[in-house]
Image 1 (cartoon, rainbow, N blue to C red):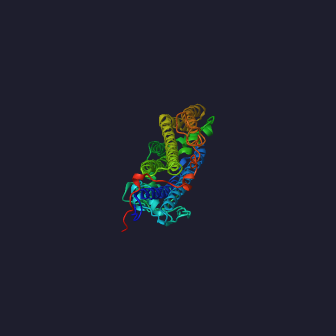
Image 2 (image 1 turned 90 degrees about the vertical axis):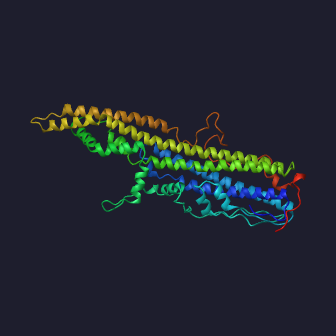
Image 3 (image 1 turned 90 degrees about the horizontal axis):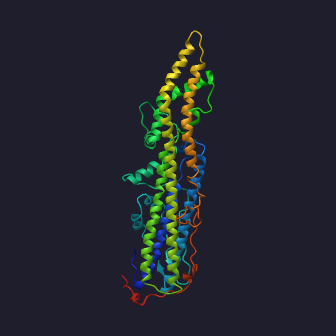
Length: 436
């Protein structure tokens, strides 16, 4: 923190407390930008199951609510900081310079959020003047920032890689034997059990599976559901790891809100030992307690979104695994029956009816297993990422009893503490600190 020459000890406590709130506002601005970038899950990685459209939409709504909350927190806490500075300067009777320990706050914040703090460079107002009105900080207002991640750290590498996950499905023209960065990204993000097993099945048996389906179309009764086109093809392009990792990284916001609560509570407790006035400082302590509760709600909301996104990603991967298992369970018999039907078609007087029916029965059995898994996943999907879901009994009330955006609190008495003179504890009214 800065030096405060000429200020009484109790006044230094108040100014330091105000500057900490500006730093909290800067962190909320970084959280806002972080959620915007990390929380934008590419549409292509969800797969094509019917319910993923709702998941995509609900995830985007939930993400936008968390962005709105971070904006509410930023503006509300910055207004609180401005009010605290005005109280301090009115008590002091002369100007007080405003500073912010930006680098120190970045060191204290998580490694994942630090690049966004650096990129945004929130600037506090320079001066508080008696009888005036402290202006809000200056915020970055341009397009999404391009933070410089430290690639020497695991967090930086992860953020850099996740930033490239929106181009996994882009085609590439390369020379034989070439390994491009996008190929490495596909390998990394493709490394989940279900996706790997389904692609293994497809590489080994998809050709014979589609051949079997075509034979049944030509010579048999046809199928109500085809394993390849009705199930496997819908899931094949999904990258569950992208969903899971992006959702997991939202927990960084929750962690920072938790850290902010703890620091605010400690600093508010310290301030109580310096100031005591029923309609001034006491009203602020009530407002500060409400803000801490608000930050707890934001932590809960951010963690909810993170957890639901991870569950959705795992559900996609589990479904891919179920399809692969169903395929492997029946494919050896399908291969034999395809050969039986082909042999019959080569005979002197072919009658493909019986072998085609047997093949159709086996493909139907495979499709039935897949349909059962599809139905189970569909049922589970209804309860995931439901932003309108009423909070469960015993769960924290997020302000609206749902997962919508939580508004900044309006404590009892409102902002009356900003317009009422504060009185210090007599024990803290110490001589002014020496200048220099």
